[in-house]
Amino acid sequence: MDIYKIALLGIISAILIMALKDQVPVFTVVISIITGILIILYILPQIKEIVLEIENLIDYAGISNKYIKILLKVIGISYISIFSSEICKDFGQANISEKIKLSGKILIICCSIPVISDLVGNILLIL
Image 1: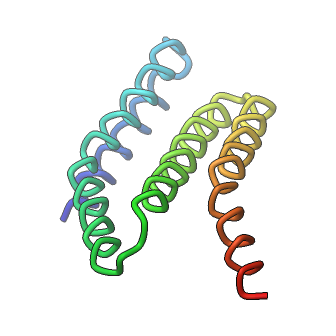
Image 2: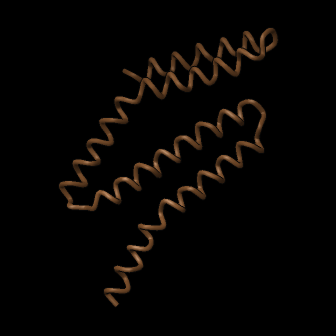
């Protein structure tokens, strides 16, 4: 299973970081970032499958492609903001971490405005 490989990579990286933390602290940052990138690259094919399946469902349901683009953009913003926020938190930068989370939430709201606008328009048509 893929999760075993990902978990093993994470555990090995954590052990390396703990071992090098006192001797070469700069390497701990590099190891952490590289580990995160490797995990994302490893699951990228599964993400591609999910996106294709969602697109197929959207086509089958006859929903506008506009909504799928917004959905994928929101998911991307969520993952990127969480990932980068956690890296900052791991290195003791809780303040920056919170700013990244807040920025992600604001960007998600901005992406959602067209959906909300269409929803309000449809409600007004019904009334």
